[in-house]
Image (cartoon, rainbow, N blue to C red; front, side):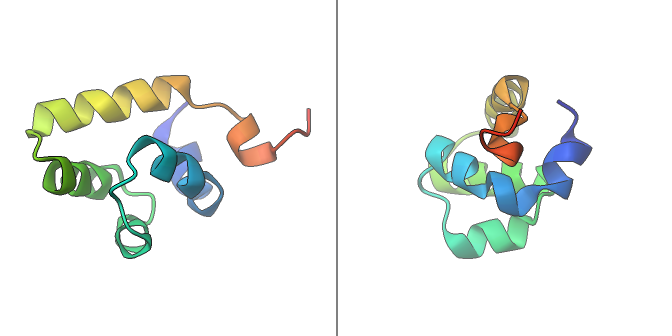
Length: 75
């Protein structure tokens, strides 16, 4: 899944983001607003990770991204 799709549907995927990175607050999610760099920065901040580790987590999460996260059970 490309990041543009995630960014464009940010409000629909924030629940999945919070499932993955529970330390992120609602305010963090508003600041991130679908921007990958912002997400990486907040993950680094809340989890005391380096940039590479945060990027690796995001890449893995993105790889597992499913259209069902946006569309619900509609298929």
